[in-house]
Length: 116
Length: 112
Image 1 (cartoon, rainbow over the protein chains, first blue to last red):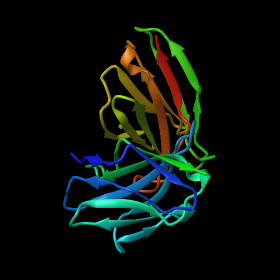
Image 2 (image 1 turned 180 degrees about the horizontal axis):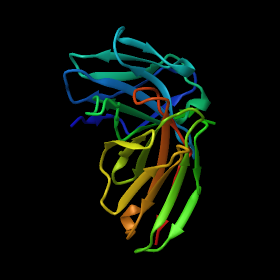
Image 3 (image 1 turned 30 degrees about the vertical axis):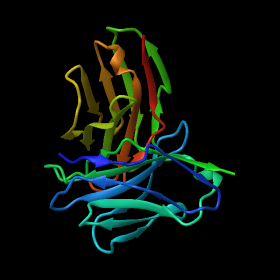
Image 4 (image 1 turned 135 degrees about the horizontal axis):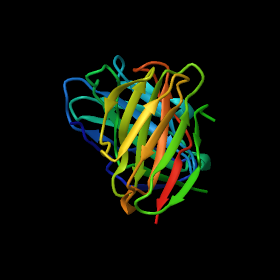
């Protein structure tokens, strides 16, 4: 079974500073990687996903992530954060289940706190 | 707004009781997923349905069951409730079995 480690439970940062949220996963032959964001009192929203192809993936709201197979990592980055980016961020990895679905295993989440 | 609706938003009940959570997927989505989010376990996949048929199963307890109806809405039934079942239950939907999942706002269950 896959496992996901989000190395930081909380990341405080000042507005307009860059940020990196770290994610490592257990290795597998082929994996599919996702980052989700959860704003307070809301469901999860997909930020970006890696299925194949270019290892640098661009998502919504100016976020991007880089898939590094040798280091089994999929870190999320943003060059300049806004107050509105304050939220919980979840990294997820999935194999294809026997029925062909992508069933994600989630990390424990990283709380991004953007200070003015 | 993802287009996925869940009712009720909040539910307070007692140990030993049974509850039903309801999910309406986005228009046109055939696949429905259920997740449980708790402080202890984090976010865990429970079960997936596609066009009325069970497609994948995760860490779903035997006390829990789900189904997807012909109109594609889904219900998650939780019985013999325990304190540890208190959690946020999310439903997600997708067009097919490999497309992006869109999450509903969740149902917050509190078992007293």
